[in-house]
Figure 1 (tube, rainbow, N blue to C red):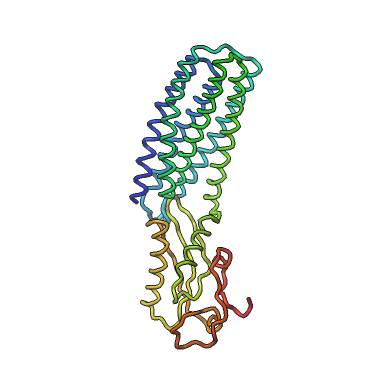
Figure 2: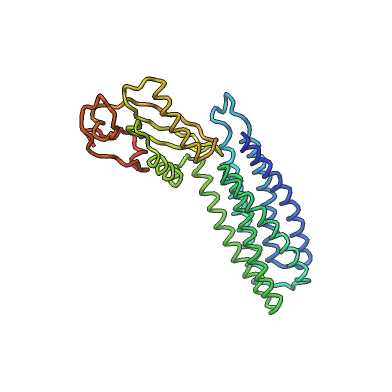
Length: 330
């Protein structure tokens, strides 16, 4: 809950700063009549809209779970990122339209040096806010905040590229440079929009995060306890900043309920140490079966039926399967 509040606070600053930067860029465009600067201003309009959409989504995601939303409201972040990606794509198309029109019908540029100073100042502010959003978003597993950070950073990169083009225009007076720069960065912005949309759709559809699962498999393999005979049916679903993890943990059949629960607590502590407190575990404990003696290297087992033959390494592939390891049918 504390992470959700921090995400919301950061997004408030993003929304407020985006309004100020939009005004600055519109002033620079009005001063210069540069289509490249107009490109930057149009993207800032999207920044403002996306900033307030992200703010609302984080407000919703921070709400505690209720009877209608037993898993919380974290999915709102994926919807926010999808809307933001769509807005960025729309801005990119509008930018490309204006840039091509300017290339075919170039117009005069005025007071370019003043416009460049204003745009350079906005790039510095955008870059700082983008890096901060991305850092907090990754730390708190907030897709909405990460989307805002990536959007601000892509805005910064495009602004820097636009500035380089404007410098070249300033010294050469080749008017076509203004339109070409706008076209190039319109395409860059379109590519950024696709990346955000791809991740948001994956979250909405509960697509498996293979990178996260791979990291989890490596941690569990490295930290295996002697009482963890097998682990399978591992699944992870992300609801905003919260990870819901399901798995089946096989422990020696003779452990009592309290002893088996201690093993589950130990497993949970390892994951929470690596992934933070925003983790919910649903662990089903199984008692080991006689055929699993062959894959169990527990040294002090007094009820062993078969000799230990081989150790099965816990990998992403075999931990995700819905079947106990060591089965005669393997």
